[in-house]
Image (cartoon, rainbow, N blue to C red; front, side, top):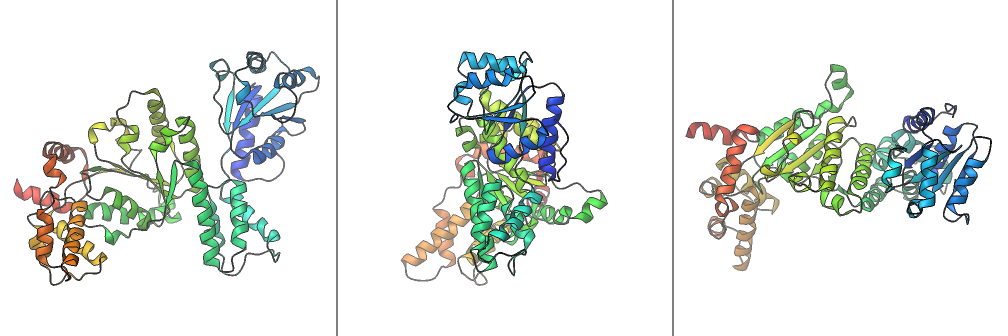
Length: 488
């Protein structure tokens, strides 16, 4: 195989180079993992240079064993690309012939092309596996430019009002076919804003097909998060770290934060707000969907490939301990190891916002420096934070707060979490609505008396969690820390 001569993107060039190096290193049996069969065929042919490429699929009508025999029979070297081979790997004849290819006993170079392959143990040691990355932004931009010729009114430029960078960013993470379809659909829109929303909608559909990723469209301003002033200040200080000026200064891109603490105290909310303050899209990783897949390792690998292609973004992993903590199951151990490696080695600008409620289930290596920039402990809100949460919740419900003594109402609610304080407001509104009047202070007090907070129901567990947080993580709120100093 010769070095490619035609210009191509960095992602495609890297794939072609890796394929060529594997063959030069002596591998005669290779696996190319991708869901983009057409794109993979083009790049494999490019990597082969002058060598002939022969394709076999299940629709060829020729048994796979005969195709492998033909691959080895000729005097001239060629590359055979086999598609749809998973069902044939249980055939002992096919398995033996593939192993002979891998051992160099046959005069053949064979590439197995599939989105996922469950390889027999006899083959794994003889195979070089190469992943075809999703198209990068350069390639996506080329696809956007190419759709100009296919528009109802062909043109060499984008329609008026189209921001090329915004459209490329919106389609990042899609396959070439998905991105092309999204741009064609966008071309049919007369309004630039509607066209961009169409591309984003197609991206949501594309991510939805992975089952493990969800593009979250919940834009939470940092001002809507009550308390947690240390975390909010920390996030705000990271905003400029994504620019070229920060790179020139020697700053690495922020890697993320791990939020541990009491349930219902704003960990998920501040994770969503991180996307808003950093100006990045928010994508949620669902580990339940990862483990529900036939091959969790493959599912995780595919979703991390998509995340890398979409970057920069905020990757939200809610209740991470439920997906990665304390399991002896082999699949869970392998997924955990793969995710830890990706956290440590990732170079794409992905800000990981992970939350955890049960710190006893967290593996120690997860919180190691280098995987996250900071580990925060989110405690029960202090009196002033409780007042702020009540005020924010009431304002979101269209109520003025200047005539309500919220400080006096919040002061005795020491064991209430932020979620329980929001429930207090909701129950108080129901009470006032039932009596056909506006909400008052007594409604809030009565609603609070009806709620037994989680910190009271599970006092021992919550206190043990708060004791852990005093020495093992940075406090998310300066207010609570100062109060505890005065108490001591």
